[in-house]
Length: 243
Image (cartoon, rainbow, N blue to C red; front, side, top):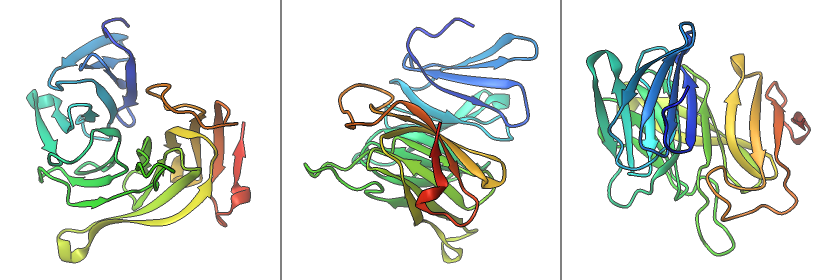
């Protein structure tokens, strides 16, 4: 397929379908039917490049971009909702749907935000999820992946750890709507992408010595590789393997 005029920054499927979505630095999202091998739609709205996107069961992908917005697209109605975290929130670099009405975003300033689609601002935010550099700069949340319809999410950066989070999505604030860290395991390098396997038995990580979007920082002695992480109990340092 051809059509994007910039680098492709994200790919995702609608679950259990052959519908593929692609996002790009050209600010555009495109959808394709891989059974028919045809392009379906082109989605416009982001004012700057799209950095990440995700989709689940409904035909409603969620995207984030350098324009500091998250957008939930309703393809059947040809509309989309725009979510803003306020003037101080940095652009998001990662996004993952937890279930169809909830999603998480990871930001350049190290913040993890939990969103409910009926709210225009995050219902909860965790700052400095991956700590700070020696210069006091908060590390960005480069990748995030939630096990769909569960309370588990994983995040990656360049702090040397894959971090695990418990996500609460209560019907109201009194029932709990927040994110809390559960545990961590060591991973050396930039964790640029995370894919959680069925039933959270394992995770595959795309690890590099540089950030996936640029070459402005490097992790010494880190190798570009795929890392296989065994998530079956007990979760220990020895559960992480590499290929």
